[in-house]
Image 1 (cartoon, rainbow, N blue to C red):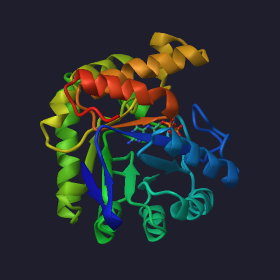
Image 2: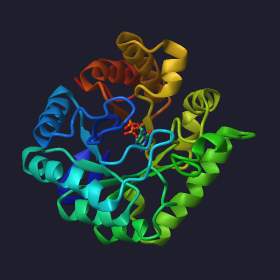
Image 3: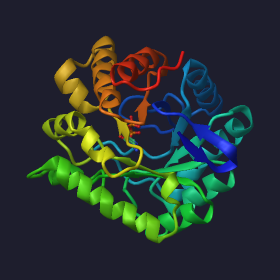
Length: 278
Ligand code: HH2
């Protein structure tokens, strides 16, 4: 369980529903650019069982171009403002920029999901600390434009673990509360399919750092490579990876198809000996 700003709590394992307000995200780009559609989709995901919603205004798929902060805010803020009074659950904002985080936290976001793991904007950790907010520290190398050529590891699990340890130390040093840090191995970010598989199979090693572990596998390219690209293949391939992540103690799974993943998470948690919620 994690306690967030404003007395909001999240019980683990939890599902985070993805809301990409972008024209170019790799799975749902362009679908929720209209704020009214975005709000409806977030409400649907929570109704289906999402304990958190993650709003993003910048795609981070391989090769994606950086979006200026003004444009990111233009996409994210209207949806955040409309959702905040209608949702009981915490809202996370997926951004690498401290100025976007600052505006989002002022509008009631509870968590910042920084896919750069504090490497993109030196002001990010201080901003999150000032608001007493939670921070998702994700592992990646380079930027979405350069990461594909940085996917070289001798021991991917230990290298990701040490890098996360260093990134968490920066967050703590800037004043982010220890009880509000979540770590994420960054599946698909500067990683090949073989790296993603090793990380998922050894996810419990990351829990040794004593922070909740979040994982995003939903519809990623390694799922396409292994399970196939049609809609059923993508959903079922993602479900298998979600099940393994939860079995290996992931606290949060970030997914597109919330309704389909609810029974998957329940079963994987029960098999792992976790708490069964019904
Ligand atoms: N994956 C994506 C985006 N943000 N954040 C965390 N913490 N972990 C992840 O694995 C993660 C993330 C990429 O997925 P998606 O949102 O589907 O695509 P895009 O970046 O193109 O919007």
